[in-house]
Image 1 (cartoon, rainbow, N blue to C red):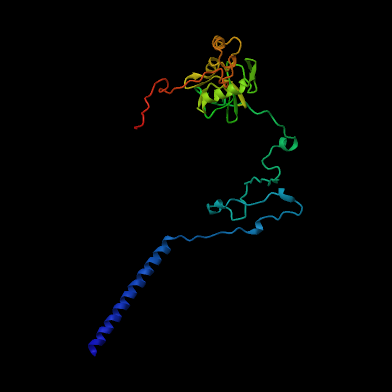
Image 2 (image 1 turned 45 degrees about the horizontal axis):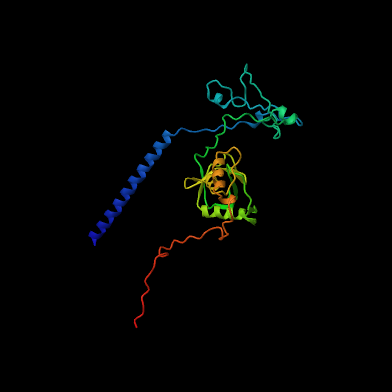
Length: 282
C-alpha cells in the first residue's frame, strides 16, 4: 500500500515540475518581447486648433491644418496645434470641379464641333493578285453556235459573230433551221466537258467575251472549219471560212437532216460478200 502511494506521489510531483518549467519559459518569452517592442503613442490633434469656417464662405475657404506631424517629435518643436514664432505656412484654396467640364478645354465646350477630312493612308492598300493562266469552266451548255453558258455567266466565243438559234438557211429551194442544227452540232462537240477560257481581268458581269479551248482545240476555229460560225471582219479565220464555204459545210451546205442528199454509209464488213447458205438434208 505504501509502495503504491510513493509511486502516485512521484507522478504528481513530476507533472507539477513540468508545469512549472512551462510557465517559467512562457514568462521569460513574454518579458523579452515586451522589452523589444517600443511603446507606440498615438497623438490626436486638438480640434480646437482648427478655425470654424464662417457661414456662406463656400468651398474656397482655406483650411488651417497646422504644422506637419513630423515636427512634433523633433527637439524644440512647438506643441501640437501651436506655430513657432517667425514661421509662415502657405495656404491653398480648394478648386471646385464640375463633372461636365472636367478634363475638357474651353474651346470644345464653347465652339461647335467641325468634321475634318480624313488623313491620307500611311501605305497603299494591297492589290489582289492577278489570276495566272486561263480559267477552267465546268459543265458548259451551248446556248447557240459560239455562245456557251456556265451557271450564271454567258460567254461569247471571241473571233466569231454571235449566232441565233432561230436562224434559217435556204438550200435546194427549201428552208431549214440551220441555227438549231448548228447549236446541236456544237453541243455534240462539247458534251459538257470542261473548257479553258482566257477571261478578261476584272470581269464579273453576267456576260463576257473570251477565247476558249477544249482539249487543245480552239472553239472558234472548230466552228469556222465546220461552217457553223462566221468570223469577224479582218480575222485570221476568214481563210478557213472560205474553205468551209467551198466545201459546202454547215451554213453553206444542204440540210444535213435530209437523207436524200446525204448518202448513208454502212460499216458492216459482211456487205458485198457472198455467204454459202447450208442446204437442209433431204
